[in-house]
Length: 503
Ligand code: MG
Picture 1 (cartoon, rainbow, N blue to C red):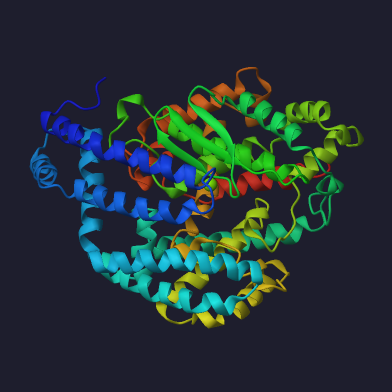
Picture 2 (cartoon, rainbow, N blue to C red):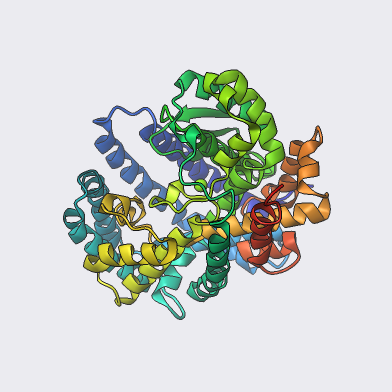
C-alpha cells in the first residue's frame, strides 16, 4: 500500500526532503561532536550547528510550504499517514512561531554556557558556581512555558515538548499510583536474594577488547544489522538516527564491572531497532522516527531490562561470558544472574535498578514542578535533594556531584524531560503483557529458536512500522487495546522479583 496518495501531500513531502536531509547532516555533526571530535573543535561545532539550525527553521517557515500545509488541512480525503504529516508540521511551525528570535538567542547562549559551568561544578562538587546559571534557566523556562502556552499548569507546556498530549495531571496521578507500590516492593525485597550490598563481579576488571567481543556477541544475538548500524564509544552512551539506513549507537567501557557496558549496549540497541524498523515508505518524511521520548525509552528499556535481564536470555550470555572473561570461571549462573538483577538503592540515577530508578524520577519531577511553580528556590535544591533521597531510598549524597549536580538535563534547559523515563519503563510493561497475551509466555518465547525474531517482529508490526503516525496516547490504545495503565509493569516486577523468590 502506498502511504501517501494525495497530490498536495506529495508536494509537501517533496519540499520536506530538503529539511529532512539537512536534519540528517545536523545529526551526523552531532554524532561526531559526541564521539570523535577533537576537544577544541567543540566550540566551532556549536557555532556551526546553531547557524544551520537557523537555516532549518527558515526552511520550515518557508511561505510555499506553509501555504501548501494550510491548503492540505482543508482536504477531507486524507488517510492517517497524511493527516499525521500535517499535524507534525503544524506543531513544528507553531512551536517555532511562538518563540521569538531574541528569546531563542538568549536561551541558546544561556544553556551553552550553563553546560560548561555545570561540567566544572560537577567535577569540583561546587553547586554555588552553577547556581546563578540554574536560576537563569529556571526563569527562562518559566518564560518559555508562557510563550508556548498551557491550559492549567506551566509545567504542562514543558511536558508537552517531550511527550505530546500528556500533562502535569497525568504524571501527578501516574507517580502517585506507582509510588506506594514501589515503596512496598522495596521494603519487601530487602529481605530477598535480590537485595545485594556488594556483588563480587562489580570488582572484576576486564580487558576492553574482551568486553567488545561480548557486546558484539550480544548485539548479533539480538539481531543487530551491521550493514545499517554501528557501535562506537562515547563518554555517555546514546543512539543517533542519522538516516533510515544509518542508525548508530555508542557504549562505554569502565575496565571494571562489565554489566555497565553490557546493559548500556542493549539499551541503545533498543533505541536503534525502533528507528530501523520504521516502514521504509516513511523515509525522509516527517513521520520517520519514534513517536515520543517515552515511546523511545519504552523500546530501550524493554530490551535492556525485560529481555536483557531475563533469565533465559542471560543463560546464553553467561555461556559466552565464560568463554571470554577468565574470571567468569569462578561464578555460577545464579551468581551472574544476580549480578545483573541486583536491587540496591544508589545515589546515581543511571546506575539504578528497575525498581529504585523510579524514585530518582519522582524526586526530579517533584522538584521541577515546585521550581516552575515558584514554590522552591534553586538555592534550596541541595538540601531538599538530600531530604528526599533519605525519605525515598534511605541514602543521601555527601557530595552535590552525587546529588543535584549529577545529571546534565537542567543545564541543557531540559526541564519536563525526566518523567518520560519512568513512563517509558512502564510502557515497556504494556508491551511485555501484550506479547504474553498475543504470543505466549515470555520465557517460552525466549527459549524458542526464533524467539527474539518473534519479539522484533511483534514490535515492528505493532509499534515501529508506524513511525510518528500516531500520538502516544492513541498508539497505546491501538497497541494495547486500553488506555495507559501502570499495572502491567508492576505485574512484571512482581512476577520477576517476588513470585520467583526461592526458585
Ligand atoms: Mg535512553
